[in-house]
Amino acid sequence: MRLYLASSFIFPRSLQLRLFAVCFVGTHLPLAAFLVWAAATGRLDVLGAIVVIAATVLGMLIAVGGIYALLAPIDLAARALNDADDGEIAQVPQLSGGDLAARLLAGVNRAAGATAERMRKLSREANVDVLTGVLNRRGLLQQLDTLSEQETTGAVALVDMDHFKLVNDLLGHETGDRVLQDFAKVLAGTVRHTDLVARWGGEEFLVYFRGATEAQAQSVLMRIAERIRNEPLAHLGERPVTFSAGTTAASRRTLDEALRRADSALYEAKHRGRARILSNAELSC
Image 1 (cartoon, rainbow, N blue to C red):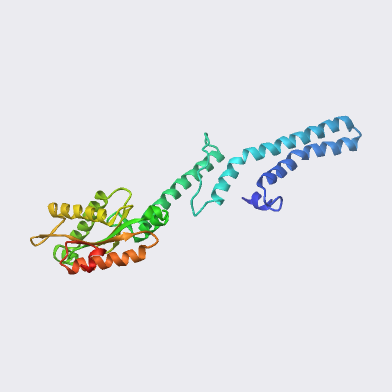
Image 2 (image 1 turned 90 degrees about the vertical axis):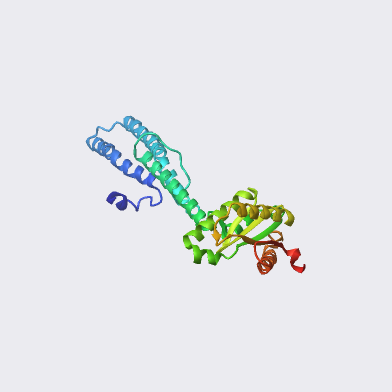
């Protein structure tokens, strides 16, 4: 480290040229001493000196090329680390052997793998609801933002568990968490893989039915309601836990307005006795 710092004034932006300068001085001291001695004693052979100097220049060029080639893996590793995009380190070619360059590239690849896994974990944690494993609000909106307007035209449903506070109060929060987890699995397992399911907050879920009509969305929700009636997630006294839902047509561009309509339909479904699925068009009925 001391030599590195002491020689930093020589070619401060190029380690390769600094190494060459150190090697040049070290290997040419004997030649310079010999030429001075030969000239001082009158034994200098001009032709021989020219041949030796020419061979030295050629050797110098070979040394420069060799130094650059041997340090290429280190330069590659440095570029991978310096050019890291959003904290992600690019993988570099692996070298066989256990010398310094091979160990350095192996270390960069380990760092790249660990960083990539950490970024994936952070992305999952930022976009996925920890309790239920479905998307959270941020994750769903991010998914929609990656799609075109045509790809996000469909129907949206706001789904809310009925009397969920009683589930927590009477059966305990652990049971409440399990009910949410099981319900999320039923939702995600029943809709198509192109549809999006998110925990919108508390015991409320949002389902985005891509390319579907509101009638198709209601049909899917009715199947889910029938399933949890036959296979209850939990019971409040003699009654199985149910859900209410409000649906409406939607697109990514009109999502905010669609959510207001779906929320109004959900509120009305609750008002009419819960355990029902109500479309926005039915509000005036």
